[in-house]
Image (cartoon, rainbow, N blue to C red; front, top):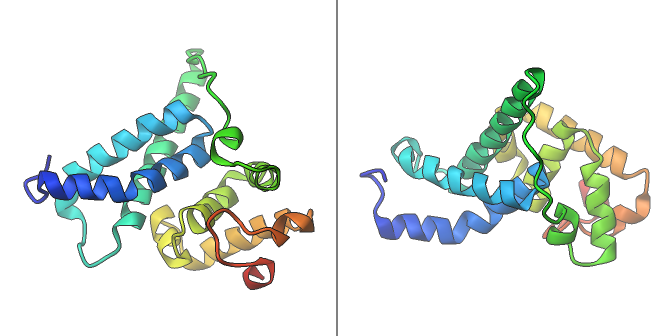
Length: 181
């Protein structure tokens, strides 16, 4: 643990943000087990590097950036292993759809989000599911704000193929279909 962070502060940060970080990782990895492992790794790294965190900035985007980078790193390692023929067995736990979404309409929307290209899906997950503003999502993904907005617009355009999906709100989202246009 970092000397800049007391045990009590660390517990408070974990309690307040672990569920959101897990949700982002579950959406990106589609594996409950992997999301749990990466959530733990996210907080271990965050606590080690807490001294580099700018305390007047919101902490959730900083944690999300660490989580997204860990997920990307994990998949880069998997791709590297595939090149050399050493592919690990995939876990057989429940899918993200059955774990993260409770009713049928939310499942339909979630399945549509999962079919989006990875870059659009990252922005939608961070903005709507983790409730991170676009500016902070862009910082989290280390892309320009305009690129973030373009990826969001492209993802939403693909979701509009089924207009009934956008009449229902995205999980934990206060914007309706008209507001996101």
